[in-house]
Length: 265
Image 1 (cartoon, rainbow, N blue to C red):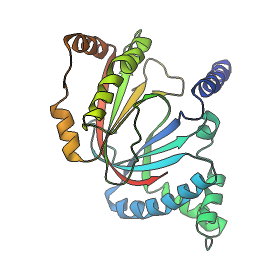
Image 2: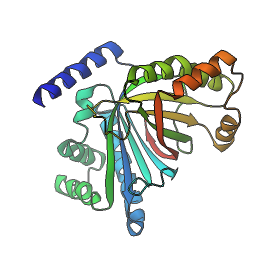
Image 3: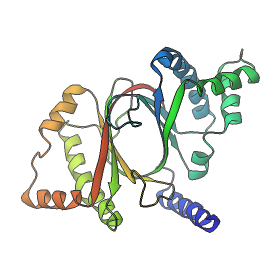
């Protein structure tokens, strides 16, 4: 196990060196909150936004999103209400992102009237408000060429995928060589704003629920529904055949529709 972990860390650094500073590492946290604690948690979210603004200013993160989930899986245990996405420059920063002392220090800087003990109590007490059901460490593999700026109110679908056993590489090739150009075409036709393809950064076995995720970003519901209506826009027979073959290399586990509530950039 120790040997596998060392190999994984080395591979992450290799990925970081290949990707360079423009590529990203992301941590996605799917969250459930008890109905009687929603207002308290949303108030804490405002506090957390200021903390992550300080984290960004200090260079600990590249950005942070807070999404409200409108729909998703009906499976018991998977009906999340919120999703946070934190962006990092490198795998080390990603793995250190939940350092409580660092968050406390950022909170004290963001709120000068708050003592370190008060900040720590506020952060730790938030753990009682919510159930962090899933935390995923991911690497950005590919994305569209666009300059879209995230802002509150935009929509996204988060599509969780699992590569078919034995077709991991086939699936990644399909996303990059078939689906990426199709999404780029949608952006050119004002049917989408941004698209990203992510791979899990931690070692996973055959029982993992998902291995990849796509982020599909829309400016509003009109664009979202237009995009759904013109799913096969200007697709040639060859492209359609390649798309169908690519779909066979993965299993779409579930899709979450979300609205962006807060953003730090």
